[in-house]
Amino acid sequence: MTSITRREFISHGATALVAGAAASKAVGGPQSQAAQGGGEKGETLRFIHVTDTHVDLAMPKTVKWLEMAVEKINRSYSSAQFVLFGGDNFNNNAPGQADAIAFKRIVDRLRMPWYSVRGNKESCPKPAGDPLGQRDYAKMFFPADLKVVGRDWKLTKGRHVILGIDTTLAQKNNGVFSSESLAFVEKELKNNPDRRYVLLNHQTYGNFWNGTDEADLHKYVLNNVAEVRKRLFHYPNLVLTLSGHKHLDHVGRSDSVQVIATVGFVVPQDPDHIDDHRFRYVELRGDAVTEKLVSIA
Ligand SMILES: [Fe+2]
Image (cartoon, rainbow, N blue to C red; front, side):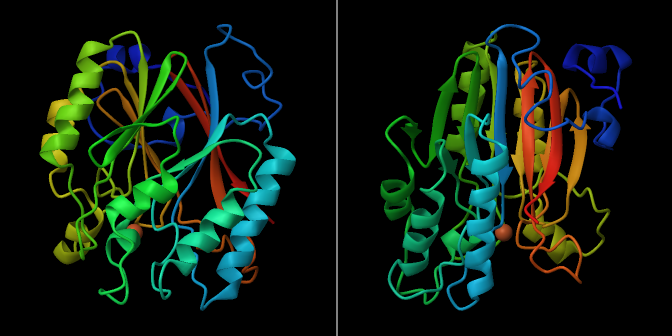
């Protein structure tokens, strides 16, 4: 498969979100050309996207799977510069902050930095009177190298910028881009045309599974997705969005933006092999996004 750059894509005039294995190139892993420093010097960004790990202390296998992912990344993807966790990282249903602490203790074993956004599990604590609120989450999970803006954050890596956007709503499983988040992202894109931007959030940017159930769509697709696309997707420096929540995998495009939803880590690749879970390895070089799913088995 051939990688398609933003400019090439625009020149082909495509505007709709399309199923897009063809829009993205599967990479050969940590030893690929880009990972070895090919292309524009110092311009390749390499990272991992893991979403919907759903660590639940009442289900010890979920803890084991996260430990396996950390071991796999340390062993086979040491060239990754950081790891992004896309929300529903833990089920937030343990007394106090026990599951949040367990998640952090395991992920802190990564040999590279890691960053995260909240999903609906983090915004819907159970029991409701035993919350890990947004401020608690930020204190526990936003390291000092993030520039925190409201509920969101910014991570700068050379020419690349990752914006972690909290699209959750308290005690709800649906999500929106708040007006504050939209203004934050738009200002970044407008003021920094030479940077390349990645958005990380939980809910999806489209109905890529062709669902027809309105309640289902309300839950999984950003409720103001049309506004988000209209405000943000025309900026040529927005390269990639990363989300999760639906637990299905999708690599597509909307306008010139590579739109990826990574499969829920908690979902086994094969029901007969329940310890086989997946995350995504991504490389950005210029406008080109290359990626592949990686199994922990
Ligand atoms: Fe979710």
